[in-house]
Length: 230
Image 1 (tube, rainbow, N blue to C red):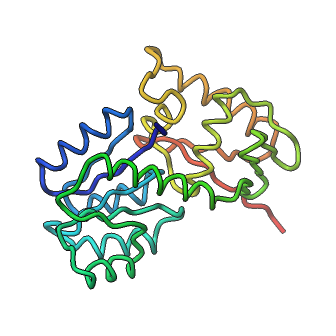
Image 2: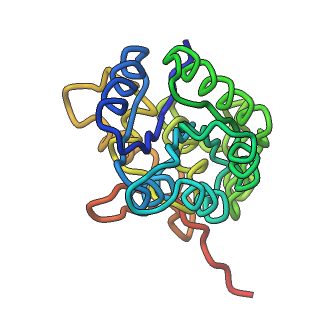
Image 3: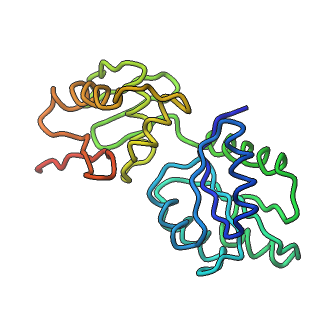
């Protein structure tokens, strides 16, 4: 089964625990928010594959959360609405605010997982295989990265790190999300990320005038497009 990074926004702790256990049982990475404000913040600052969103939240209606994510996110983040509102009008309103799929309670956990996988695959199919950030170009399917037209000498891990950062651009990526992107649920015992970030900097920044890889204190790392004088 495809490995996914899921954001679950659900205020019912019983349902949340059951879903988290089910997702993690498939080896998926799950972040959790019990309210709409935190859910929106996490969705806008992390490169998740799918957001599983309840509509009945204690602070903000889930429809508003969906709308905010769709309007403000720099990536096309699929949203699966999970709710007891099963009337046609409710579903129409959910899709109208940008929801990509809709599952009503009670539900089968297996169906939720299958729909998450389908949303993620559909989203990947519509992504451009070429990412361009200023003078940086990444060919995802060929595993090639160039800066100013010059190929970058990257290891497999270095390419995965760069691709993860590029897919999240201009947002920062936390250390934990970078580690998961490379090693999934089997991270190394040592702080291997530090050495691989160092190697990535040597390839991406050292031969050029301006750095692109920036450290965000207490957060992680992000890519920046250098400003060029006219």
